[in-house]
Length: 438
Image 1 (cartoon, one colour):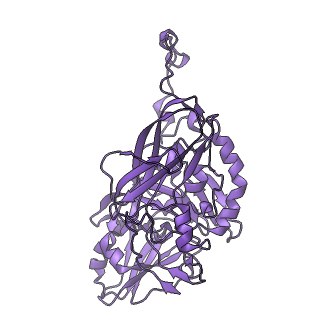
Image 2: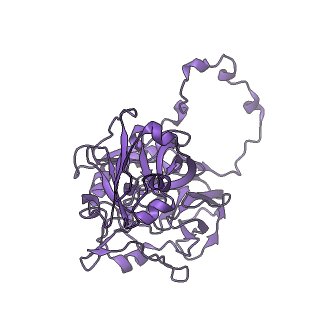
Image 3: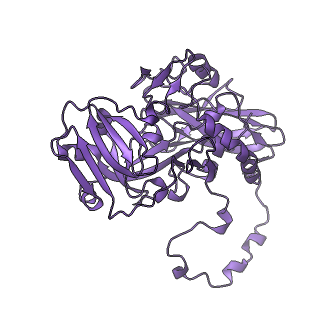
């Protein structure tokens, strides 16, 4: 098996990336059954042209019924919940029938979100053996192997260390792979929903390594979770010393059980399965530990039958969220095209948008200063003439890596890969205003 610890990024003048891939085949089969439901749920959305403004303000000045009565008592809402009118802004769960019991995914409703931060209740999930319910007072983190002073940390121990908070995206390596063999016809929650961006709070892993005195011969760390699958991955120690975090809080509150409570590893920019949830031990060694998840799984099958291993970094990517399949444009006029872009190699440098299927491109506006390995929101105005259109976005990161087309991916990687698909996504606009993945 061929190892590829850090494949070089393709440069802007090449117009394609180094490590394109596809998503999990089992997930591809399992998601087929939910497509119609998602399209039905999304079909009620419509984007009205901002040019349509009611001329008579009088009806809007009438006193509404809710303004004539006392509101609900504050004590009824000890933990804030969304409005009942937002009941369709939810994750969509999928059980992976080809996998073990408890293996499932939940997809984030990206098309219903604004900005770049994913609320905790909508962060995507990927489980290999269900969600363990862990008592934090009984949970322990062991740090052993090639260290001078092996230690077992309690949660109280970890909370006493100096902490940091950082905003980063988290993406499953199987995200978007349904598009590998051509347009899947699915809406954006199905195609791109294994993606979220949060503020992560915890202790730098480098701090703990300094605490135990790691052996300089150690090059790899085995990270193991406390779930029933004992999810395990080998982590390069250079990543651990760079920006890896031992996380106990997410978006300002303690981790949710489905996202690793009470403790998880977080590796910015690396494929999501490596950020081990419910973290119970870290073992230092000289070589990769060759776990099940990095031999039979999470490798990239190449056209010649060989498999690339340790393709950790999530490549440059973007997608248009509004409008997207399930939206309906209400007549010709002005619309804002908005979406997100991200790269596991650093900051997003630019995003270009096409409304004619890639024949011409225009530079989009980025919200604020792009953060390192975080989602970046892009926007551009569009005057729709009411005719057929095809919307695309193309991201470029600070290393010069350019988001490729599907054709460029296939030319380099064939169609046998399972993970890391990052091709340009197209949404077709029909003259009726309906959008589709085609």
